[in-house]
Length: 219
Length: 295
Figure (spheres, chains in turn yellow, blue):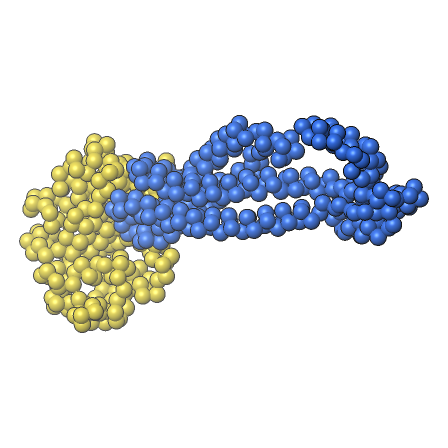
């Protein structure tokens, strides 16, 4: 699903955020990306979302060479990727239901299908009873579940999560991880960036450790 | 179609949310459209009159007091034999005096003091419009002018041509002014749309990340500009209609004299539609310029 060859990201000050990264994530895998702050985890996810371009080397995702994607190709490519952030990135002015159906709406899905899908994923994360609430009415754990539901609304083949439990207590963190495991069980490849070693130990999946932009351990 | 529905809905919501700023942009577009509309109103009315006057072109052949009946006969024969004349009328010296007394009643007493009738006899000729357009009328005027017994020929094309050229100049100046104002309006719309964009940053970020098509990302901003432009132009049209009605009420008598009994007519539907379309275009350009900052 993901393959990198001698991937580097160099910033203008001459600092490498990622340096000569060679790694592979297979289709249907659940992988943790870990390391201390500044190790390059978020940079790697930004490269996978094509929010930034690599300075050297190549990344292939689901057969796409990300360096060769045009602007239009990037839009098409992103439709197959789900994302979850530490700060949830929900739209405060929209209800929970609208936050989810919005994704299908701006992808041009017919209205009836938008609603059906939104309700389906809301039910899946167990928050269908809060569909008319606004994000600020929900707890952090609930907001992250909504973010997962939104990510699933476009039926992605790859789900990227950047510190998804960073704002949550340990119990809620495990709950969110269990949800991500269920997503993975459905066939979606999941890549979670986190520095929470305890959580990784509890979930027990393959882990790629980065430090100063280099892979230092795969286990 | 779904992108258009979505864009119009989001544009409407944004207009309502930022209504004070949107009103400001609409005023800017309205002002540009008022200038353009007023220009159209004036030029269209003048063009209409010029066309009327052109279609009723006449020339008058004034005869020498000493002209013989043979000379007059030769003049009339030349006019009648040409294929450019629609009608001809001989006005004798006595008829000319009578006409003066009738048309300028307040000056009739002046005519009573004349020792002799000072008005010349004339032949008034109405020219066919097509002959006027292709220059045959002018050729006839030149030939008649050369005949013995002719004191002068008055052909009213020159002032019509002068008026048409003045109208061209007015149109050019007005158009340049309207273009400058339209540019300023487009910049105002772009600023207002960008202001509204700030309140949608979260949505835009999510849209970009889920791979939303550009039509969905930029469409609402273009639609917002188009709506602002359309509303601004409609307001401008309304104000122009009121203005032109007030002009007719306040200066009706003067206009009637100036316009051969007519009045200032409001723009026809096609020009009104063009003005609204122009406003929408200006707004759309502003919205499109702003939308380029959406990502």
